[in-house]
Length: 276
Length: 150
Length: 136
Image (cartoon, rainbow over all chains, first blue to last red):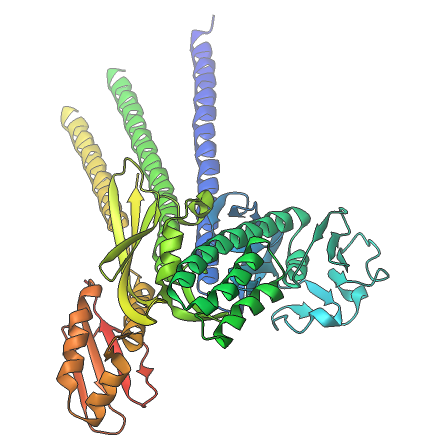
């Protein structure tokens, strides 16, 4: 009966509903805006990160990288920043998930008789590593080495007493040409101490894919060098031919790095052009 | 009463227009931010593109070496062998690009994944030292990297 | 009354025009693009060219010997002509400089007086060569 009051009530409902919609719109925009700002920041981190790695030139190099804390993953193809922005690198990489603002890089050449690839090891700079004495000499100074396995976050050893499957650290057992990731029991053959460092810096999944990648690259390079041998043996003196054949066999049957290298280096002793 | 109604209508109209302008502004701002991320992503890709000009001559597949010691030059015989090697392995490194070595009047296509359709092509190049094991000569060549945009 | 409403409308129109202009200006500045930061690329090219020149050796032509002949004799024009013939391998304006260690001679050839310089290469004879690359 009081039409004026009913009219006022009706207006209030309308205003509240309209207001809710307006509020939802602004909140939605705010959420989207925050997401986009995060993506922008991740893209910036990715850009800085990539530039930093690519700035490490050619042979063995190491450096550290600082940024506000962020998460980095590697899926064997791309490096992914905060689960959002990803980019690829033209290098083989050993790393596992990192959640830190202090990152270290170490670039090392992988040789198997000849240069196969330059590999980047990436890790959290605050992690402490224990390596057996025989593996310590090649490690750059930006990696925190500890003298006792009990203080380490990552233990790499051929002593079974040091790798006792402690839950709060990562353990790599090295024995008889085999690398074992103690936490998941995965084992891999290795023929070069280089892979021991690879295991220390990665998990079993990344280790496998990078090791496979390097082996594929070695096979490709072997084929290329066999082509070069065919070319050289036709252009060098006949006395070089048996030496080239020895090297060809070493590459075809993937003999050890030492045998491949010595077959190549031997060429120069007989006045023949080396292959690599 | 009519004057009051007119005033209310005017106020509603002003508020309506104001919100429209605000919404348009917010949408435009959002689009600008989104585009800046795309631009950063593209710049990230550009970094790799320009980097290739230093990466390719130092690749184990083409770099000169003697007894395992690497030199700053491209081995012509290795380059020819690499050019005739057909493998998808390098697609993840080079992507949709073409890499050519011009040496001694010879054009060697080291890598070729030129897409059938592209909107733009960019070319960067660098002089390189080229070693020929046949006559042990060092000459000058030109390495080109072609990038294709969709 | 009508006049007041018209004034209000006029005010709204001005606001809209201002906002659109501000938006257009912002878009303009954002889409203008950033300054080219490819200095590393040009630096790398300059170093590559200097390295490739210094290594050149084919048949009777050996760059290091030409430098020696220039710095100990007087055949610098041959050296500079040879270098200029190889400028074709660089797309940008480029210049070459030589400074002899044991004589006062220093020469140059090319059209880039101040650009991005390569690292100086000091040959075994002690003579120095350098390349400058200008952006296109």
